Length: 229
Ligand code: CTP
Ligand code: MG
Image (cartoon, rainbow, N blue to C red; front, side, top):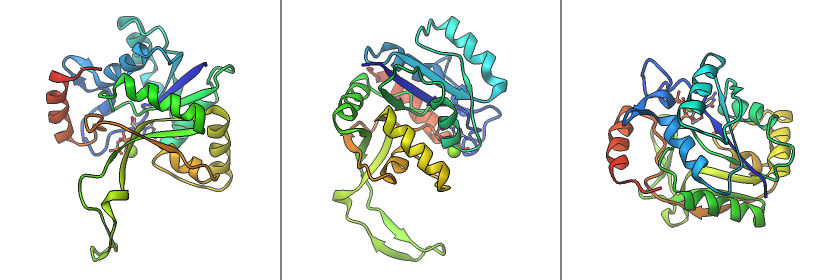
């Protein structure tokens, strides 16, 4: 079953505070984005990879394709203002024969092949799946001035990661609904939930971090030393 993966890589990495987007920072002499792309290149269930990035980075992507022999990588598409705008642009260029579409952050290089496969397999049967891990910390809801309002029940809480995989038509419908109703989300699953579909959780690993702040880079260097895809 033809499956595409969209890799949003158009962010500016404000929380990282580097001079270039964090997806282009090096990890063991290779850009973080390349580590991530290699996971999907290696995954037999993935047929094409579409990266959304800033136009000024298009040539970098083309160079990566050659240098690292990324045969599944298509020409890059332009990113948008929000993560979901970047994904919406990429969705338009997914191969017409694709039945499944995964979305995976450019800055999560420690995804395991098993997580990608299980995500696709689960979405194939249930329509939508998200990789997530059980919350380790107790999570509280607070007002804007920092007053605790509620303690949530940890046993029912999950920290959500990517990949998130969807039957293509479900993702298209969710994005169309979000555009019409001005819905903004930090993950695709929320947009799908808004059209009445409950994604199924695939339990992932704590290694699959989203490299966000400078301390994550230190952690990433350690994780890389023992990572087995
Ligand atoms: N992303 C994107 N288009 C945007 C914003 C984000 O494609 N307009 C991508 C990022 O490049 C990243 C992923 O979405 O791969 C997750 O976003 P995040 O971790 O928030 O990255 P940034 O937006 O770059 O970081 P920050 O929020 O700190 O600026
Ligand atoms: Mg962001």
